[in-house]
Amino acid sequence: MSVRPLSSRALRVAIGLTALGLALSACSSSETPAADPSSSTSSSADAGTPVDGGDLTFAIGNDPISVNPAGIGSGNDTLYVTRQIVDSLTWQDPSDGSLKPWLATTWEANADQTEFTFTLRDGVTFSDGTPFTAASVKANFDDAVAAGAKSSAAASFIGYKETTVVDDHTVKVTFSTPNAAFPQATSSVALGFLADSTLKLPFDDRASGTGVIGTGPFVLDHYTKDTETVLTASDGYAWGPADRKGAGAPHLAKVTFQVAPEASVRTGSLTSGQVQAIGGVQPTDIETLQGAGLELVSRANPGIPFGLTFNESSDIGKDPAVREAISLAVNPTEIRDTALSEGFKVAVGPLASTTPGVADESSHLVTDPAKAANVLEADGWAKGSDGIYAKGGKKLAPTLAWITNFSPNQTSVELIQSELKAVGIDVQLWSGAVPDFQAKLADGSFDLVWGNLSRADGDVLRTQYSTTATNFYRIDDPTLEDLLTKQLATGDVTERNALLAQAQERLVTQHHVIPVHELTTYLGLSKKAHGIELGADSRLDQLTTAWVD
Image 1: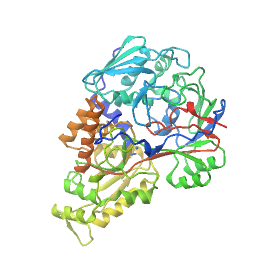
Image 2: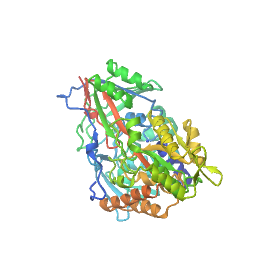
Image 3: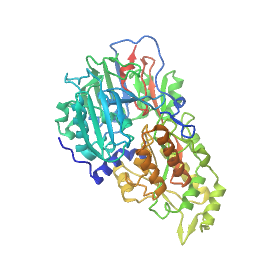
Image 4: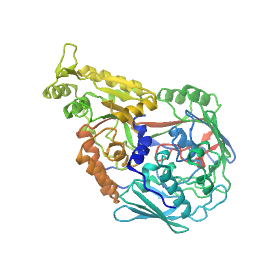
């Protein structure tokens, strides 16, 4: 099968769909610290000997939209479901961000990070009994590239040339340009594997789940849109990651993901015993669940924390002095304390604390409203009678775009509006439906955007801020571009993290971004549910360790 490389436009669309979350969510040197495992509690407490055969009802906030693991779904809730159906080549350890064997026992890369060879585990089968082989890897990777912007996996295949079957248990993946982030991408749900019979179905038809067959510990029983997705244990599953607790068959007989859009309804269902677990716990419900004696499983999300990013093609965003002044006027600690709780960390830089390669740039993140005023006045801005700065007859009134994908967002942006108004900057808030928001990002009719994006690899910075990726923010910084390009071509972890650290410093010292607070994922559990874990991406890991009384 010959697969045509993704066109530049198709690739940007694919990355854009994946990266909408920003607007919507290894060893290292002392200068480039590894992900901070102390910032999270990724699993529920041990409560004795697991019991086999129980049924778990797990309430989620959104319909999955697509049960195709590589489809474009509703976000975390989609991945909670599809992670149970498919396995990946590698597993990312949430304790330190390192990659461990899963369906691949070993892997290696060539010197320029354009060729990756994986040795596959023997004895793995899809739930229909067909074997998982090197041909399965090739078929799935070729399928993802052929789907283009329809596939959430497409962004991982930058410069993809081909996948070659060396033998039944050896496969080689080749790129035309360096892609050092690819091994981490192979741990994702989007690059999980589907049987040949599923791949023969049209890509769009797989969203319903009909005919979707993976190698994972659970199989799809049925999916009823906006109501529930029901999974049952797969017979004979025995190939989970050896380094992950619960590598064998699942204890649970059945898992029902029940759709409950209202957070208060999910919380009420848990406290009343109607469900055994809930996702999407909102900050306002944390105290309620703790007061009821229920357990919370939490983990800070890796990737880009919530914060502001400038559109540097706008008159306001292209002015370095204005960017610096706005950075000085924003108080991340006040925003965290007002909109959230101490369970959410103030950001230390453009990467969250659980991201491999994170660098602490907090010394560059200073709040100083008086200095902000001085910077503006030195740049020729003067306050009018209304207290708002203006220059050349134009008021300093940037448009800040945001979206309601996280309930505290409104409080956060309104507080930012207030902080900037106190300095003399009249922020105009804009929010809308996802399609309208995406159109706004594409046409550049904004000055600032509020958002985050979760991914457990520092390459998330390139996918957001490189001119060769989405380019929503129109950043024209050759030094930053060079750093983001070089890290993708560097296989040595320490060297790559050093480049990522320089990129993080550049992003904050040039005031391209203003990091504010991290996102923390919270799950709520009843006293009957045990062994439920969050993975390195701070999303629900496979439920092989889970059990109910």
